[in-house]
Amino acid sequence: MRYYLLAGEPSGDQYGHELVRELDRLDPEAEIRFRHSSEMVPAMGIAEVASRLGAIARTAREVKKELRDFAPDVFIPIDYPGFNLRMAHYAHRRGIKVYYYIAPKLWARNEKRIRRIQRDVDRLYTIFPFETEYFGRFGVQARYFGSPLAERVIRQAEAEVFRKAPNKRTIALLPGSRTHEIAWLTPRFCALEKLMRADRRWDNYELVIAAAPGRLQYDYQPYLTAESRIRVVNGCTHALLKEADAAVVCSGTASLEAALIGTPQLVCYGFNALTWWIAKRVVKIPYVSLPNLILKRLSIKELLQKEAAPEKLLAELERITFDAEARAALAADYATLQRELTQPGSVQRIAQDIVSE
Image 1 (cartoon, one colour):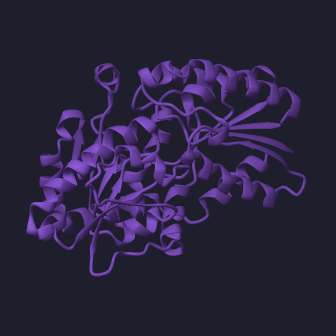
Image 2 (cartoon, rainbow, N blue to C red; image 1 turned 120 degrees about the horizontal axis):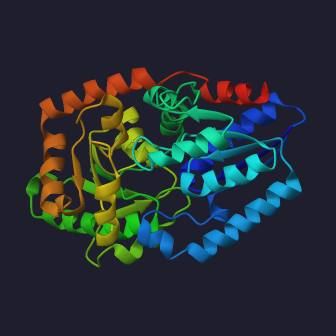
């Protein structure tokens, strides 16, 4: 069969590459086209999307042409619903089967998009157990085979190498992959570092930024102050989390990765003022971090927008670094998450389900 996979963000690239390997292994006659995030225009937030409308429209035309020319049997959009649901509709109208991988997070916002899934998606694959019940309420037969993320995170943490500074302990900083996330969080990390340097308890700690997939050190340099000693590393996010005493994490998949590895963490996030004003009115979930959503309670501290002030970041970082009781409570919650999400061979089972059609 012919398969066309479409990802719009680095996290989707990783899921897509794993699925491509399994499809190629299970289907000897597979012809695969995978358009990944470097060929796309990733953006998040009202203002951010508005500034890229022309580029997004050009990308849409290119994807439609590729779907016509390649004529796949199966179109596999990966997450990124703002763009991918439009492409799913186009593929469906052309008679192409649509198997959506990494179900859109409609339980967070834009629930009206459920009608598009009902209309245009033939199969929906979820990576969180609570999503099957959610989509089932709308008559969508979502399929859950375990979380590919859980397996990948542990495997990468063991394979990667992070070189600690001599005689130093480590605090991991994960400011996200999107430009607006890096621009919003990195200056706050610098302010946090300045506060830490005034407290002798942090003398033997080093702050280390994990560059997101597809990002390089120079993406972060414009936001680091001249006096900052924060180090930026590439290609070892999971190993860094494994070695770190604690982490400050941009809300998103990274918070779940840190939980699966077992790193005590706090989550922070923010937008420009306009996007934040709109988000407060459309986002309906009680928490922004995936571990809290899966556990259905507040386990990890979330500091959002103005709450993500350096003083508050430092206070929570002190708690999860030096308070043994707080660290033990997080470890117990992480163990619960690991039991719920870990099902070995999840990507293979998803690929087998796709090929079996």
